Image (cartoon, rainbow, N blue to C red):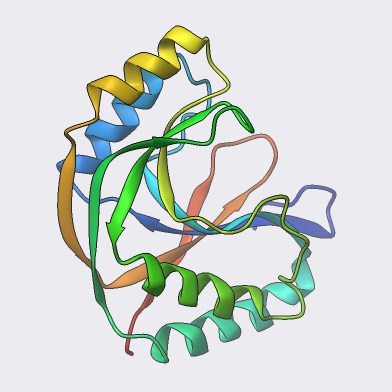
Length: 176
């Protein structure tokens, strides 16, 4: 199990974007010059540091959350931006917003996962972040007509050691 300081691990929870759209959106993020080389996803819980000993209870909590939520259709369509607040361009979630919000809230309800958010939760797929304004504009324009629709049947727990990329640890199937 990767650890940050020996006693802690950084985790994140997300819905992966399936093929053929996942690699396309990941490639577009790299082409924008974004150094963050994570595969395309919708974040349910952003990077969160927890004690390693809490991981089994967190996984039990995530299993309970998954069983309590049914699979749903996620429709990604068009682009949006958080500018000028943050330098982010994203592909928008057009359908499945409330399902993502409910999952994120249920996940965040675990005592080990509760944290203060800088901004209200807004499901999206980041395609450019903290890059030159021209690259943000290009990503925004190039993906304006993007559309993908697929069934979300699970979410994934990822871990990060601080030295390697985010690694999938376990999938949690919705609805049991």
